[in-house]
Image (cartoon, rainbow, N blue to C red; front, side):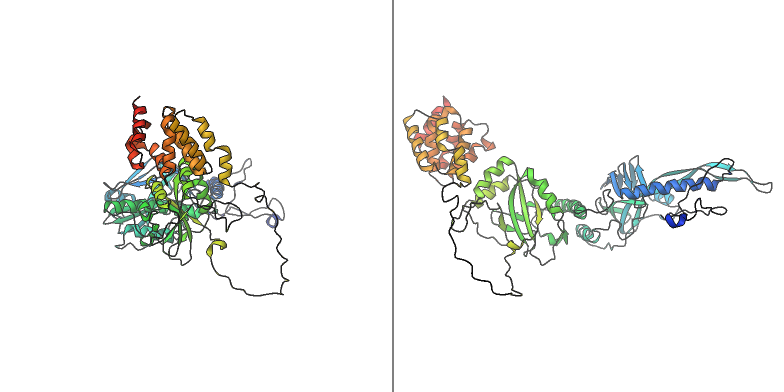
Length: 569
């Protein structure tokens, strides 16, 4: 292992065993002193041991990797231009462990201090990009007297103690820093420095990068605390570079959205206006996606963009699966598959997923299956496949916060590319296939049930009417009619159950005529359930709520009067 310091052994080296050089890897620069009684020890002997221990410790540090272990967060105050570095620990590429035990505050505009610390070689900073580096430093302190070895020599003085520590420094980067927009410049550096956290070797071997600072007219313009910053790791595993890119992208995107909001601009813009490379998983502005019209403006037109609801509990797994995929090159002509995911709670996901399920096509499918709950997005508005898509997606979008939406890249699958194939070679002609023989399946004997049938076996309208019976004549007639007409409808059964859970038993006299009137109208029952759980009506009892929204559902006056009487009783 090469070190910066070396020594020349005194006298002749003696091998303790013949042939040692043929069976061992001996590095003369990494040796230690051998002690024995009556030996004369010199300063060189003791320094040799210090160099040896230092080299061994650095080997351990190199085995751990390099980067920031914890802390060392850096921030810039926009008011006074002071850079603050928090306490923490980092490991350099040379294997040195750097620990900052107290918070540092550095004023870039303090020319006198900068002039003093640099021995007069620097008074102010030029307009350029600088990498903020915390690096190893050693300083000689105290005074020790060196006595003469003979009568003709004079007394001398040396440092008594060498103190080790860390220092903060700015190192100028070669990248051009003209009049370019800071967001665009930082976005370009994301791609240029991907996989190279030393900025082409400008970060010293005994230093750790904390971020990139832009300086103009001797004052800091902006600070990116994620560029060139790397967590401690010994080697790059699958997904590590994508994690670095994602972390830096999120930092730039947050500043971009804040800048556009400050300029009274919305979030509907193309990613290629600022970025050239995107991580396989990342956030995106909500304004750039409109599932109601089926439009997206964030990704290039040649990309295949879908949107789908997702359970919050599944987000981490989906992120981990997609993070190992390659970054997204926005200039690529490939049809990259991207899914924009809208996180929902388990309860809301179950509610909206049923509305987005496509009906079973018995002509083309042998077995019932559930399609991926996703909507294809285009640069221009398409037509929704289902009549309920627009309303359902609007309800989903109203529940998504501006910071909740994110996208994931998905691998291209041959079955989804819809590309035609070309026959490259043919072998011998195969014999014709035998005549098809119809083999009975479990479905022919009624042994196979679809999802709706399995659901109705456990919960059905007949059971619900037995749990909530009524002796009123109108209610009894309504119960018979609703079981007869909608007893085989799984969706209607689920909606009726949801309504009964939220309606008190004191309204059993009118609840069944009301549910029958709703079930007879398309989508009315689902909208009524939504109104029952609407937070705006949380302070109203059910009877007053029905009277408030009943006219919207076409309830007659007799039914509304019955609800009102029960609500007041």
